[in-house]
Length: 432
Ligand code: C5P
Image 1 (tube, protein in one colour):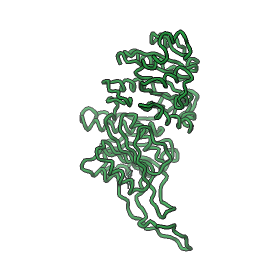
Image 2 (image 1 turned 120 degrees about the horizontal axis):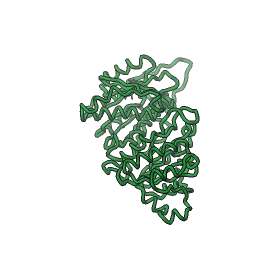
Image 3 (image 1 turned 60 degrees about the horizontal axis):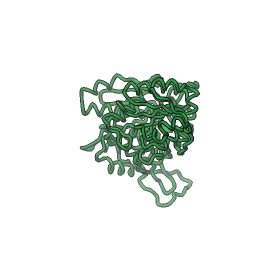
Image 4 (image 1 turned 90 degrees about the vertical axis):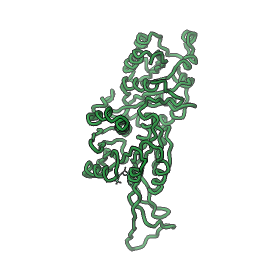
């Protein structure tokens, strides 16, 4: 990090005390750090703390004549190699997403050509609110040259007593992400780096349900919301992958940086996957694909009669098994959504479909699985398995992708990564 210019923005949340540790890690690694605090941040931390750590006066005002006569705000915006805002409050994210330049930090973010990363930290309800999610989504589009990177949040117990998503990532984690962006000077215009674990990898993902038409009005489908697959797509992008997401009908926004292909039926999903799979490194089949479709689709609405009705169904192609059977195939990951004997059914599917990895998912529980924001899954491969613990789907997605990257590196260097695979259990308390 020697000589890298990091502008550390701090906004008003209790996690601001952790920014002192982040600041120290950056300084220790040789970075040149300047700190800008919002008014709210100063209610939690003294600017003097950061001045002592960085050796530079903390900037906190846009209209400070004395500070402006030193390094003006536009100069400061140009000086930064990266702006990292940690913690980033819901209020700051809202202002950033809408282009406000009402204080020094928001003005710098608007004026800088450098990549921006934010580490959200807020109460779990605030994070989950639709408007906050919309604002986070909008960050993808605010810059002309690159999306704003959103790091975290993590989930776990919060200062307010709640438990859920909204905890700022730990300083060491944020530091590692900054370092990864800079390492080997590989940061490109999109703010991505060769050092990101999935940099240079192409990932194809299916998500959501399929709809199997009976007539122009009715269809057969299932309860899949697509949330798990969309979370994997979003996390894969932030780990550096080029991601194509083939989605059944869902009402979810496209994660930033993801190429999305919308389909409706299993047959369409099959065709879209086969058209996109050449050149892919990883295929993750998280879609809940209908196994059967009506043999006939009536061209006009079927009329009711006093009799019962029989619909003749025929099998749909198995997409993930087809991909796993290709001679030049990506690392292939399936999901097993089961209501009973989850692990043993999943193991059977891993083998029968010829997969590299399967994610076993108990959909009988109402607190996880379909439509829920949470999941509690077990990753299973030919000679090992690992419970990934209950967490929100973003965190579960990160854990699934971590397992995938470990397997990918095992493929390229059999000794190095093999040791990592069996010994890392995750539990709720990992978030603490
Ligand atoms: O056999 P089952 O449907 O339980 O297998 C689930 C896994 O297979 C999931 O990864 C799902 O996306 C995939 N699948 C598929 N094509 C199908 C049926 C399931 O890719 N027709």
